Amino acid sequence: MSSSLSGDTRGTEGTSRSYNLFPSLTVSRSTIFSALGGGTLTGKYNDGIPEGSRFHLNPTGAGDERVKYLNSTEGKAMVEKVRQLTKIAEELGGSMTNLALAWTLKHPNMSTCIVSLSSHIFRI
Image (tube, rainbow, N blue to C red; front, side, top):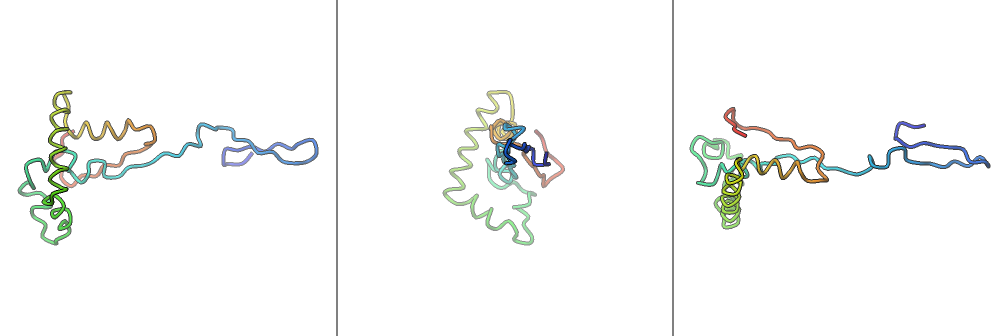
């Protein structure tokens, strides 16, 4: 028996047959990183870029592309969709953060969700 969860039996004529001991474990699953879309799916940018946030301060210019996106027609359309989803999340008694993470974790092909924080102030 090998460590790859497959087995080997010898046939009557000395031929090998392979079989999978755990067929349900061979399904591929995904890990999602940045499930909150860089803060966008928390509702953080629903009213523009908040003062004191990393994109507002942006001393190194590292967030320039994100700021351009948030101010673009496409970015504004996405923020509007998040505003609408925020209302739904609140009607359900939760936050936009709750809704985004729940959707991610409920997906049948998702095994792991990695969330990183840019601030010590974070409310789920």
